Image (cartoon, rainbow over all chains, first blue to last red; front, side):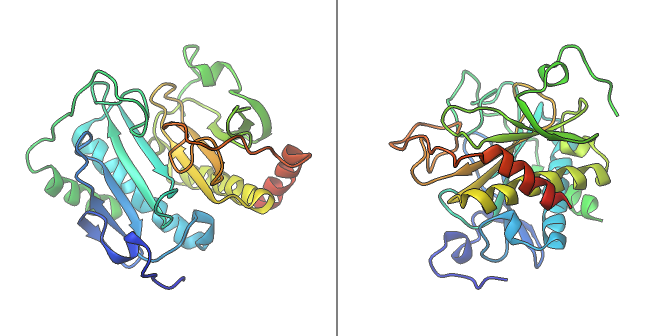
Length: 140
Length: 140
C-alpha cells in the first residue's frame, strides 16, 4: 500500500459528497452539471493503476464498481452504463460510473466528448438515498 | 447467454485484428491512427452491460482486461493506462485498453476528447507479437 501523498487532490479531499465508504474505497456524488447521477468510486490510498493493486483488491474494487452500476440500473433504468478509469489528470485510482440516456447532453458521445442536442436528465426524488440503499443491498 | 444478433457490428465482425481469443472474449488491435497500441477486449456474445454477466464471467473478463493492461505496461511503460467500457454506439460489451503517453495526441484528455499538441507515439518493433506473448504469460 502506497503512502497517502500531500500532492494528490484525491488524497487530500474526498472528491465529492461521500455516499458510501469502506477501508478500500469511497463512492462519491460528483455533482456533475450535465450528468446528475454520475458517481466515482475512489480508492482510499494512492495507487495509479489497477495492476498496481493485488488481485483480491482489484476484485473487491470492481465488485463495488459493479454494485454501483447495478444500483443505478435498478433505480434509473438508463439506456447505457459507462465505466471508465483514466487518471490522466489526477493519477489516483478512481472509476467513473455514469448512467447514460439517449436524451442526455453528450449521447452517444462519451461525456468527455462533444455536446449533442440532449439536455440534463433530472433525477427522481430522494435519488441518492435510494442509491445508497440499493448499493448496500448489492454489496450484501 | 444471449444469442448472437445479426444487427450488431461486434456480433458480425471481429472489430479489429484478433490478437488473442478464448470462448469468453477476444483481444483485438483496432489500428487506431492516433493511439497505435489501443486494443479492445470484446465479449464473444451479445450482452450490453457488465452486470448482465454472471459474477464468474465478470471476474474472468476483468482478468483479461487487466492482463492486457499489464502486458502493455511491461512492454511500453506508458505514463498512464486508460480503461473504458461505454457501448453507447455499439452496445455489445467491450473494453477499451489504451496506453497513454504525455506526448500523445490527446493527453491529458480522454482519447474521445479534444486533440492537444502531442503526436502519435510509434510502437517498438514486433510490438503485437511481444504483446501476445506477454498477454499469454499474464493469463497463465
